[in-house]
Length: 284
Image (cartoon, rainbow, N blue to C red):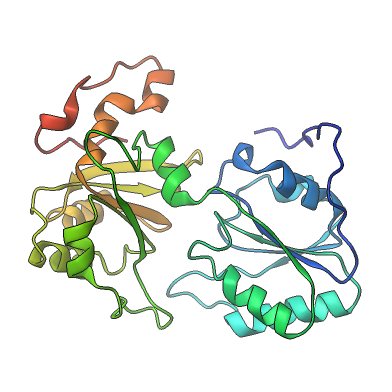
């Protein structure tokens, strides 16, 4: 992977001012999925506070900046969210140009909204830079479209755990099971047995196609195709570890035709018309 700094085309790019915090999405992992606004921010920041899911190589494009790790990983010791937010306030009040760099999109299960609220409450000006969320970009890299006119005209994005780390109790799984053809679950590996059982109890078929995408868009990406009832067992057998995106719905079958990364390696699609086929096979 090259770490040379890409060229920004000539344009009136926003200037980062001292005392500001820019909340920026770094995308799902592949540095090529950064936005140009994100690259512009990397070039200007005095200090970068970054998450665990920021892709390798991205920080090398900001050698001038102090880099502070603030990653939060489920079940592991990590900084408290309140402390991270207040650290951003302190850095801004010290006159720094602060870049808060978050994996995916800062407002999609990234707690960017909470951090922005804290900053505004303390009188710190903010700028929001969206990023490509893993639930869209990661699945695209797996060859799974989250919408498709023939099979899934609706998609629902949900979190697999709440603030305590437990399975979220406030989610209406019955309503989601009935109302959404495609369900994309973030941070759900730990509670996959419970989530699967709730969806099946709400009427989703036990053999409904499911894809688990780990380390999406990176060189370590792995895709497991399974079914709703077998997802937890198959994930354990494959030794899958977070971070992962879980996708539930018949649209998963489209990967059999649209696995473009395999095609780039010279492999042919497994099935050009997969929507009527049964359980898919596992694919790396």
